Length: 212
Image (cartoon, rainbow, N blue to C red; front, side, top):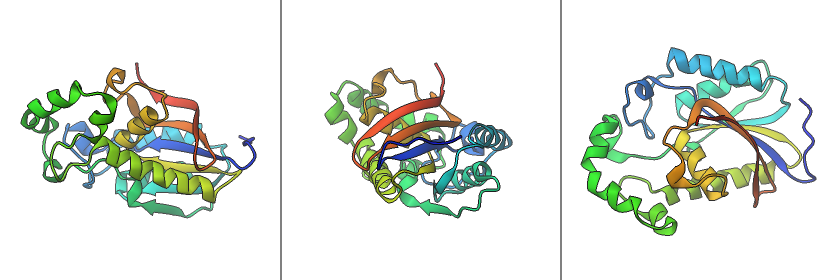
């Protein structure tokens, strides 16, 4: 697949890692490690097949193993070193990592309901607990890394493997989706999107991975 980039723009393929064991067990993963599952390996292979003809100049991934393993599979036989970054991790859930999602949602039931009725600006900065990242925290961290990548790779195509929360908040920030109408988990494991950026502005060109 030959990329025709706008002059000075970077083409970024942003992929979600394959499903993990904790994903299958509905456990809060956050920034903790969980092994990629057999299903997750198949999802990564499917993404690899879809992106097999893209001429990547660089590959970046979250430093967590499920993202790095997905990046390795998509990389295939390309002679590229995968660059790991903590900035590409998903949300930190603090002490609630490794606990059932149902436990987390029940514990914060009232706060989650309070947040739900807030306008967007207040919603994104609403903090459930001191050790849990807000949507604003995630967006600043993730998009800052994407800007850096875009500036470092003008007129090139780059792969970024990350986590679902990063992708959702990115799509909200660039105005591609509305937060409250986007069902949690709609961007599938192994799904990807193609984004064009000059290091400041972002345009979503294609998405292969949103379930209705």
